[in-house]
Amino acid sequence: MAEAERTDGSARERTITGARVVVCSPGRNFVTLVIETQAGVVGIGDATLNGRELSVASYLTDHVIPNLIGRDASRIEDVWQFLYRGAYWRRGPVTMSAIAAVDTALWDIKAKMAGMPLYQLLGGKSRERVLVYGHANGKDLEHTVDEVLRYKEMGYEAIRAQSGVPGLATAYGIGKGDMYYEPAGEELPEVQEWDTRAYMTFVPKLFERLREKVGPETKLLHDAHHRMTPQEAARLGKSLEPYDLFWLEDLTPAENQEAFRLIRQHTTTPLAVGEVFNTIHDCRTLIEEQLIDYIRATVVHAGGITHLRRIADLAGLYQVRTGSHGATDLSPVCMGAALHFDSWVPNFGIQEYMMHTELTDEVFPHDYRFERGFMHCGETPGHGVTLDEKLAAKHPYKPRQLPVARLRDGTLWNW
Ligand code: GCO
Ligand code: MG
Image 1 (cartoon, rainbow, N blue to C red):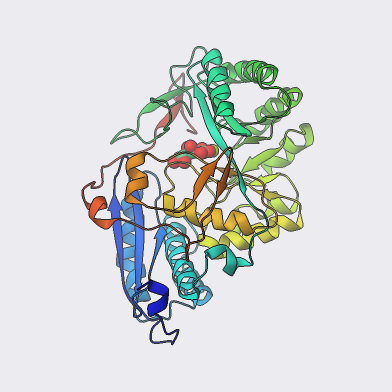
Image 2: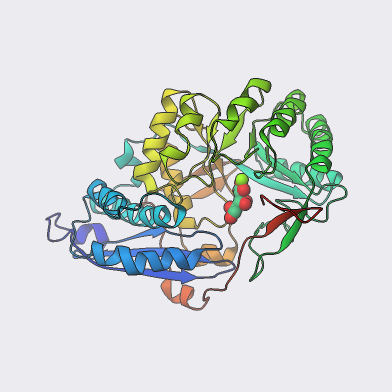
């Protein structure tokens, strides 16, 4: 019998009877929250925070789950408010990822009980398919050009290009293998060298060549990964204007949102920010002053569907569009939920899509699919992603941390 059919919809049936955290490592670490109800309907949420997985797992197990047992799973908003306000200590990546996991699991349960795919509960589809961008990463300029052309062959209409920089041993975004990029490689952080000048001299050359090769149609994106000062960021944006980028991402850290005023005054290159944001407060000024074009907050790190929707609605007032983070360190559970969100959200821009490994896809069976540059969420009730716990148990947690960056003189910089 299907889960939805077992439910009689009464309050007793909706009671949360159990919840547990599953940490597994099918190629990389993932944290998943599983919530069970009296009716037997189960929902899951992603709680993965790259390099800090066990902190979220512990926050969930020690402080969140005891508060969930006995509650009505249908009261998503009230549970969200309880976990956010009720903790007294607000915001932060660990807390907000934990809240996101609960929120995603509860939306999954509600949609399953309603017998509907999640996008229907959000208000139905605003589009037929979800535009995604893939990652073309090369060790040098020529290799990156080849990779971009390879992604174009695969049907991508939007491609992010990252390249090794002459004179720098490592650069953000350059993976070891061919298809799968994963930055968290070592038990203790790998130290990578950084030189802004070398980078800023090189990047315009890369995009000049890329634009020549791909023509005017392909949407090209680039991630600067927080390395510039605001003034350098402004100059980089200006120097890339002739190559008509879809966006330039994370030019400078955004704890100080006002820093973007300077960048914005000097360049018309579209700006994207937000993968490390947890709440609407992290981007309020950026949005209200129209200092960015795309907000990259995501389901798992920004408090779940419930909170991401608030961010997107604020952004919509200012013609800022969504462009959610979708790296491999966000599990397929997050991707599934994000695709339902993307299918609904009126001010959708683009979705980042990095393929998970085959093993990850086996541990998290799902009904979303990629087709010639676009993703499609499925029609299964819920968000359409499940967890094979038996298989997950065969791939236990492995300690891994993200790299750090240092300038040539040894100064610690932003990775
Ligand atoms: C992106 C991101 C990622 C992050 C990673 C950190 O734009 O996809 O910058 O690659 O570096 O998610 O865990
Ligand atoms: Mg990024």
